[in-house]
Length: 151
Image (cartoon, rainbow, N blue to C red; front, side):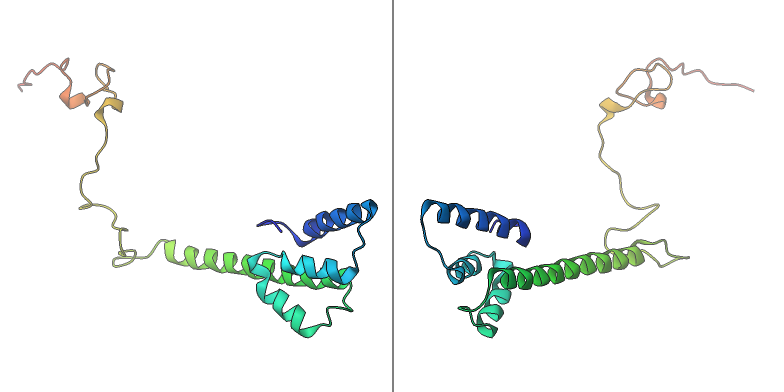
Protein backbone atom coordinates (compact mmCIF):
# COMPACT_ATOMS: atom_id res chain seq x y z
CA UNK A 1 0.00 0.00 0.00
CA UNK A 2 1.30 3.44 -0.87
CA UNK A 3 1.47 6.20 1.70
CA UNK A 4 -1.71 8.30 1.47
CA UNK A 5 -3.56 5.73 -0.66
CA UNK A 6 -7.14 4.96 0.30
CA UNK A 7 -8.25 1.48 1.31
CA UNK A 8 -10.67 1.25 -1.62
CA UNK A 9 -8.06 2.10 -4.24
CA UNK A 10 -5.55 -0.30 -2.65
CA UNK A 11 -8.07 -3.14 -2.64
CA UNK A 12 -9.01 -2.42 -6.25
CA UNK A 13 -5.37 -2.50 -7.30
CA UNK A 14 -4.63 -5.67 -5.32
CA UNK A 15 -7.69 -7.54 -6.56
CA UNK A 16 -6.86 -6.58 -10.14
CA UNK A 17 -3.41 -8.14 -9.72
CA UNK A 18 -4.91 -11.26 -8.10
CA UNK A 19 -7.43 -11.58 -10.95
CA UNK A 20 -4.69 -11.33 -13.57
CA UNK A 21 -2.66 -13.97 -11.69
CA UNK A 22 -5.68 -16.31 -11.70
CA UNK A 23 -6.10 -15.70 -15.44
CA UNK A 24 -2.53 -16.84 -16.01
CA UNK A 25 -3.16 -20.03 -14.03
CA UNK A 26 -2.01 -19.22 -10.51
CA UNK A 27 -4.37 -20.68 -7.91
CA UNK A 28 -4.79 -18.28 -5.00
CA UNK A 29 -7.17 -18.92 -2.17
CA UNK A 30 -9.05 -16.05 -0.56
CA UNK A 31 -7.26 -16.46 2.78
CA UNK A 32 -3.88 -16.09 1.01
CA UNK A 33 -5.03 -12.81 -0.57
CA UNK A 34 -6.31 -11.47 2.78
CA UNK A 35 -3.00 -12.39 4.46
CA UNK A 36 -1.03 -10.63 1.69
CA UNK A 37 -3.23 -7.53 2.01
CA UNK A 38 -2.75 -7.39 5.79
CA UNK A 39 1.03 -7.80 5.46
CA UNK A 40 1.30 -4.98 2.94
CA UNK A 41 -0.70 -2.29 4.78
CA UNK A 42 1.06 0.95 5.76
CA UNK A 43 2.43 1.61 9.23
CA UNK A 44 -0.57 3.65 10.33
CA UNK A 45 -2.71 0.50 10.03
CA UNK A 46 -0.42 -1.66 12.21
CA UNK A 47 -2.65 -1.64 15.28
CA UNK A 48 -5.71 -2.33 13.11
CA UNK A 49 -3.99 -5.29 11.42
CA UNK A 50 -2.98 -6.73 14.79
CA UNK A 51 -6.48 -6.43 16.18
CA UNK A 52 -8.00 -8.03 13.06
CA UNK A 53 -5.54 -10.93 13.18
CA UNK A 54 -6.15 -11.51 16.89
CA UNK A 55 -9.92 -11.21 16.91
CA UNK A 56 -10.82 -13.07 13.70
CA UNK A 57 -10.19 -16.49 12.26
CA UNK A 58 -8.01 -15.58 9.27
CA UNK A 59 -8.84 -18.84 7.45
CA UNK A 60 -12.55 -18.00 7.45
CA UNK A 61 -12.37 -14.23 6.82
CA UNK A 62 -13.46 -13.07 3.37
CA UNK A 63 -11.92 -10.24 1.37
CA UNK A 64 -15.15 -8.23 1.65
CA UNK A 65 -15.17 -8.55 5.46
CA UNK A 66 -11.56 -7.42 5.59
CA UNK A 67 -12.21 -4.49 3.27
CA UNK A 68 -15.24 -3.29 5.25
CA UNK A 69 -13.32 -3.58 8.53
CA UNK A 70 -10.38 -1.59 7.15
CA UNK A 71 -12.73 1.01 5.65
CA UNK A 72 -14.35 1.61 9.04
CA UNK A 73 -10.94 2.09 10.65
CA UNK A 74 -9.83 4.42 7.84
CA UNK A 75 -12.95 6.56 8.29
CA UNK A 76 -12.33 6.78 12.03
CA UNK A 77 -8.73 7.84 11.43
CA UNK A 78 -9.85 10.50 8.95
CA UNK A 79 -12.46 11.83 11.40
CA UNK A 80 -9.89 12.06 14.20
CA UNK A 81 -7.49 13.98 11.91
CA UNK A 82 -10.29 16.40 10.91
CA UNK A 83 -11.29 16.91 14.56
CA UNK A 84 -7.66 17.55 15.45
CA UNK A 85 -7.38 20.20 12.72
CA UNK A 86 -10.61 21.87 13.87
CA UNK A 87 -9.38 21.93 17.45
CA UNK A 88 -6.06 23.47 16.38
CA UNK A 89 -7.89 26.14 14.40
CA UNK A 90 -10.11 27.03 17.36
CA UNK A 91 -7.13 27.29 19.70
CA UNK A 92 -5.21 29.47 17.20
CA UNK A 93 -8.21 31.79 16.76
CA UNK A 94 -8.44 32.32 20.50
CA UNK A 95 -4.75 33.04 20.90
CA UNK A 96 -4.30 35.30 17.88
CA UNK A 97 -7.30 37.55 18.39
CA UNK A 98 -6.93 41.17 19.40
CA UNK A 99 -6.66 41.80 23.10
CA UNK A 100 -8.17 44.70 24.98
CA UNK A 101 -6.19 47.36 26.72
CA UNK A 102 -2.64 46.98 27.90
CA UNK A 103 -0.90 43.78 28.74
CA UNK A 104 -2.42 41.60 26.05
CA UNK A 105 -0.49 39.99 23.24
CA UNK A 106 2.90 40.51 24.86
CA UNK A 107 4.12 36.96 24.31
CA UNK A 108 7.32 36.00 22.56
CA UNK A 109 7.84 38.02 19.40
CA UNK A 110 4.46 39.71 19.42
CA UNK A 111 5.54 43.20 20.47
CA UNK A 112 3.80 45.90 18.49
CA UNK A 113 4.31 49.59 18.18
CA UNK A 114 7.36 51.41 19.39
CA UNK A 115 10.57 49.87 20.54
CA UNK A 116 10.70 46.90 18.24
CA UNK A 117 13.96 47.96 16.65
CA UNK A 118 14.94 48.90 13.13
CA UNK A 119 14.06 46.52 10.36
CA UNK A 120 16.72 45.93 7.72
CA UNK A 121 15.62 46.63 4.15
CA UNK A 122 17.12 47.39 0.77
CA UNK A 123 17.07 51.09 -0.20
CA UNK A 124 17.45 50.18 -3.86
CA UNK A 125 13.69 49.48 -3.91
CA UNK A 126 12.76 52.89 -2.43
CA UNK A 127 11.52 55.58 -4.84
CA UNK A 128 12.08 59.25 -4.09
CA UNK A 129 8.90 61.40 -4.14
CA UNK A 130 10.84 64.41 -5.41
CA UNK A 131 12.89 63.12 -8.36
CA UNK A 132 11.27 59.67 -8.73
CA UNK A 133 14.61 57.92 -8.81
CA UNK A 134 15.35 54.83 -6.79
CA UNK A 135 17.83 54.45 -3.95
CA UNK A 136 16.98 57.30 -1.58
CA UNK A 137 14.18 59.00 0.32
CA UNK A 138 12.82 62.48 -0.42
CA UNK A 139 14.63 64.07 2.54
CA UNK A 140 17.91 62.61 1.20
CA UNK A 141 17.28 63.75 -2.40
CA UNK A 142 20.23 65.48 -4.07
CA UNK A 143 17.76 67.47 -6.23
CA UNK A 144 16.10 69.01 -3.16
CA UNK A 145 16.74 72.74 -2.85
CA UNK A 146 18.15 73.54 0.53
CA UNK A 147 17.01 77.10 0.97
CA UNK A 148 16.06 78.60 4.27
CA UNK A 149 12.58 80.05 4.61
CA UNK A 150 12.64 83.45 6.27
CA UNK A 151 9.55 85.06 7.70
